[in-house]
Amino acid sequence: MKKEFLVYIGILILAIILYFFVTEPVTFSPTVSLIIIGLIGLALVLIFVRTIMGKLVGRRTVFSFVAISVVVPFFMTVEQPIQTSPEVQSLYQAVLDLKPGSKVLVSFDYDPPSAPELQPMAETFFSLCLERDLRIIIMGLWPQGPQQAEMALQKVMDEPAIASKNYRYGIDYVNLGFQVGNEFVIQRMGDDISSMFQTDYYGTPYDSLPLMRNITNFSNIDFSFNLSAGYPGTVEWVQVAVDRYGVDLGAGNTAVQAPQMYPYLRAGQLKGLLGGLNGAAEFEKAAGRIGKGTKFMVSQSFSHVIVIAFIIIGNAAFFLGERRRKEEVVE
Amino acid sequence: MRREVPLIITAVVGIVFVIQYFIPHYPFNQLNSWFSDWFSIIGACAIWLGALNLIKISADKIYRKRAGWGYAVVIILSFLVITLIGLFEGESFRDFGTKFDWMYRFVYTPLASTMFALLAFFVASASYRAFRARNLEATLLLLAAFFVMIGRVPVGDAIAMKLSIPEVIYPSGVAVWIMNVINAAGQRAILIGIALGIVSTSVRVILGIERSYLGGD
Image (cartoon, rainbow over all chains, first blue to last red; front, side, top):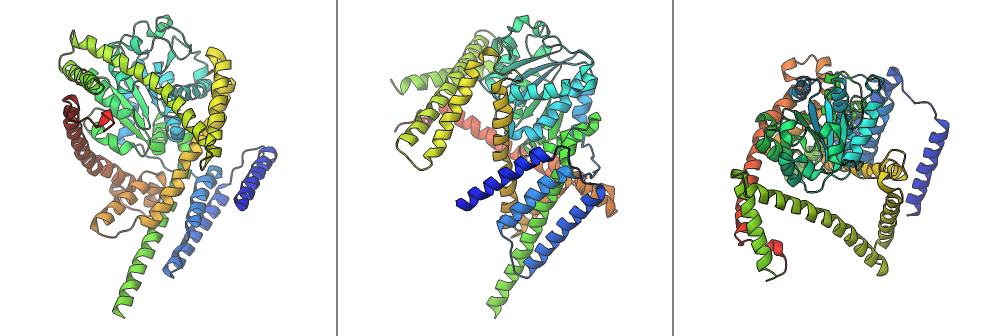
C-alpha cells in the first residue's frame, strides 16, 4: 500500500513538473520515431526469444508495452495511408447528396468514456454539415449526450472556415437536449417531436425556435445520424425510426458495437457506418479534414500491433509448452 | 390485487403496443402516445429513485463501516458537490465556463475515460494469456481476429505495401470482407434468434404466464 502510494505521488510530481516546464508541444522527428519503433520491435523479439526459451513474461510487462504503444505515438511524426472503406464512403456520399438547407437530426447516445472514438466522428460530421449549409438538430437519448454535442459544436464553430459563416443558434442549429424514455422517445418523435422536446437544452420553448417551427415529425427530417455506444442507440433507431417511419439513417458506433450493425448496413437500413476510431479517421479522410481520428490512428495502429505480437508470443509459449508436456509423457 | 393489477396493466399496454404497430389509427395511436408519455414519466421518476437509492446504500455502508466505506464517502460527497453546484448556478448551469461545465469537462470526463481505458490493458493481457489456437474453431477465431485487428488500422496496409502483397488481399480488404460476409451472417443468425426469443417471452408476459418480473415468491 505504501509502495503504491509513493508511486502515485511520484506520478503526480512528474505531471506537475511536466505541466510547468514543458510549455511547447513535444514532437519526435521521423528519425527518432523510427528509432523508437525499432527499439520496441527489438524488445518484442527479445520477449519472443525468452518465451521460446521457456521464460514467460508477466502481465506487468504486457501492461507496460500497451501503455508505451498508446502514449509514445502521440509524440511521433509517422504518416499512415488511410483507406476509406465502402461503409464510410457511403455515409459521406449520403451527406453530400443533401441539398443546402436540408434538416439533419443528430442523436448523441454516448457518454465521455466512448468520446475518444465518437467525438472525432461528431466533430467531422458537424463540420461537413455546416460547410454544406445543412441545418442541424441535436438531441440525446443518453443524459450526457447533449453536453458532448455542445463540446463538439463549440470546437467546430471555432474553426475559421465555419466561424466566418456566422451560424446562429435556433436558426441554423438547435440542441433539443436529453429526453428519458429510450426507444419510446424515438417512437413519439415519429408522430410529434415537440411532445418529447417541449423546450430545448437551454429551456427555450420548442415553438420559439425558428428552425423547429416547420418540423413536426420525422417526415420533415432529411437525414439522421446516430452516434451510439450501446443501449439505447443505433439498433433502436433502426428498429423504430428507419423500419417504421422510413428515416434515412447513418451511424457512428464504437468499435465494439460496430460489428452488430453490419446486418442493418447490408440490408440498406443504414446508409453508412463509422466503426470506432478507424471509422472516424476514414471519415476525416473522406471529408478532407485532419482531426483527432487521424492523429490518434498512429496510437491505435501501435496498440493493435502490440496486442497481435503478444497473441503470437502467447501462442508460441502455448505450443512449446504442449510439446514439452508430450515429450515428458513419452519419456 | 397486488399481482392482478400489474398483470392487467402489462396485458393492456402490451396488446395496445402490438395492435398500434399494425393499425396506427385512432384510438390505438392515441393510446400509444399516452403509454409512451407514461413510460417517459416513469423513466424520469426512476432517475430520482436511482439517485436516492445510491445515497441510501452508500450512507448505510458508511454507517455500518462495511468494507470499502471510504468509497461510499467519495460517492456521497461527489454527488452533493455536483448537485449543489448545478443548483446554485441556476438554469444556465450547463453553459460554457460554468463550474458545472468545468466539473464535467475536467473531472468527470477524464475519470470516466480513464476507467474505460483500463479495458485496453485487460484486453491485451487476456489476449496474451487466453487467446490460443487450441482447436480448429479457436484457430479460425484467432485468424479472423488477426485480420480484423491488423486490417482495421492503416499500418496493416502499410506493411502489405512494403511486402508487395497483391492489393486484393490487403488486410483492410480482408477485414471488410470478414465484417460484411462472415460477421454479418453470424450477426443475422443471432438477431433472428434473439427476435424469436423476445417474441415468445413477450407473448408469455402479455398473457401473464411469465411473472418473474413481478418479483416476490
